[in-house]
Image: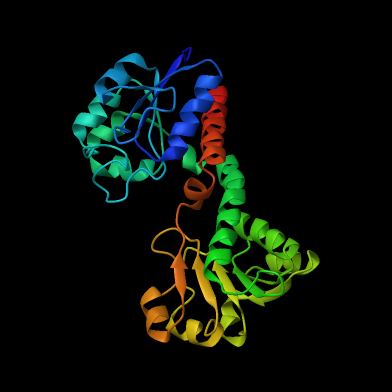
Length: 286
């Protein structure tokens, strides 16, 4: 099948930059669910039914939904239900989406839709680590009363985001501690010049100025917060439900920020282009 056109349905400004990037490569792009924005994007805004009639592929937003019932479409005038009606309208198209498993669990009708989950792609996760790390540092600069330079920072988790974040913090003059469980990760942390922290022994460490969590599991419990983060600003980068007990942090007087969807907030243009590149990679492989 030769792809000539895309419909972009819902989402934030990442999706609009994705649409612009597709359009710049010669594809026809139609958008729906952006009624609240003035059309300064040189994109054709149409009702969903019309965009789907005119397009070969559909692109749904990242994240797909925030309430489990409606499409994530903050600029739409009305809610867009993730119901059987929408599923039937998407049948016969390649539908690029996130949270495809959740969609399929909503109704058997979604099982018949050709869903391609771009959030599961490694290249998207790797490239999104940079805007996420930059966004985390922007949050730290805004919320922490001191400077990153000279501060004592803990990065919990040494995955894609953790690796990039440690490098940026070191470049800004911070003393960087990185926490991990695997011995191989701890060896790499040491080899790269960071201070090693075993995640299973977090309570043995303290005196941090800023703590960044990237682990999507509850590792910063009330006990750990009291021992490790008493004087620290805590920034949780992990997806919901996160890795920080925010109720306990509030009770302990610890400032904690759950910084979600940072690429879309701090670098929507770069993030939109990453989504476009990922979708094009998937099409090439097909």
